[in-house]
Amino acid sequence: MTRPIRLEISLSAIRHNFLFTRQHAQARHLFAVIKADAYGHGVLDTAKTLADLADGFALLNLEDAARLRDAGIDKPIVLLEGPFDAAEAAAMGGYRIGGAVHSQEQIAWLAKGSAERPVEAWLKVNSGMNRLGFRPQQAHDALASLRALPMVRPSAIMTHFATADDDYGVAEQWANFAPVAAQSGLPVSAANSAALLRHPHTHGDIGRPGIVLYGASPFEDATGAELGLKPAMTLSADIIGVQQLQAGDAVGYGRRFIADRPMRIGIAACGYADGYPRIAANGTPVAVDGQASATVGRVSMDMLAVDLSRLPQAGIGSRVELWGPQVPIEKVAACAGTISYELMSAVMPRVPRLLKD
Ligand SMILES: *Cc1c(COP(=O)(O)O)cnc(C)c1O
Image 1 (tube, rainbow, N blue to C red):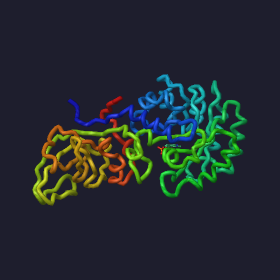
Image 2 (image 1 turned 60 degrees about the vertical axis):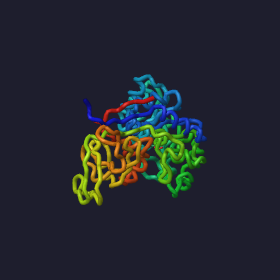
Image 3 (image 1 turned 90 degrees about the horizontal axis):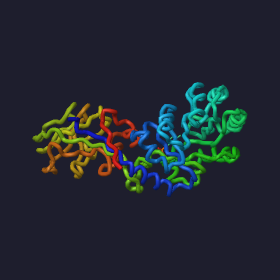
Image 4 (image 1 turned 120 degrees about the vertical axis):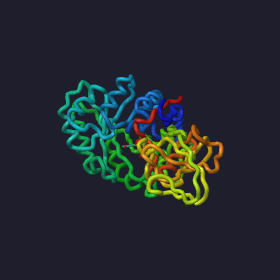
């Protein structure tokens, strides 16, 4: 017997979401962003299911990129942060793995490299997020340095938006980036999910959708389902205990919930050690056997409590959806003061994963 909790991944939802994104994108090419184990969906499974649709893949570690190659995926792969040291820079060409180049140090590592094949370099411009990249004024010189290296092939110029998903928008960063991008003559890559859905003038040649592929919304004002996406991840656990409460009874650690009337509650086999946020408020939505309900009390390491007062049929063995098609992950994230990205990528390895078509 295994503990009754599982993470279901719908591959057909991921494919639907990719095709949905393609319909909205002006960019000719879309590189699927599969960093952080494909936002918790499984890097290899996600890459395989998109292998015939995506124009390429974007992720962080060389190890994951090499796993894709070993699995026979031959689409272009780009490391979003580029090589982390000289050894990585030297290894990239052999696996036909390209990468962002955001620092002078990376150019120096690539210069030392002796790869069998030129490394495809995406020059990364810091257009205002101030995380990684060359300032727009430095981009010309950085590109000249890259062009001087025989074993490097500059193949794109990229930037990343800090506020494509909110009211601040992308105007300022786009104004900093667009002239440098045009001057470089390279294919342009700027748009994340939010920009692909709301800022068509930034689509350039290569879009980089992440969160939308997994069916969640990058925006605060809409869920993925409301945008036309299909949630690809369902976290669910079964009820393993039932308690009858009187008015005044407390639930869980810290007595954070006190019943104000007689109540029936169920204890589901999911806790923060599974990746469910401990900080989630009383009243965070769940669905019990398809019926809407909510959490009560503080989330424990291995369990959480849900209200069954209006669900007389529910009991031990009932299935509680924590997030998925019936419970928008964006709503759960909002109740925990975070975003869907963090919940998806924080599901713990102890939760068994099931692939559905
Ligand atoms: C994560 C990431 C993306 C994808 O962002 P989403 O908001 O998930 O679409 C695109 N580009 C870069 C550089 C990233 O780090």
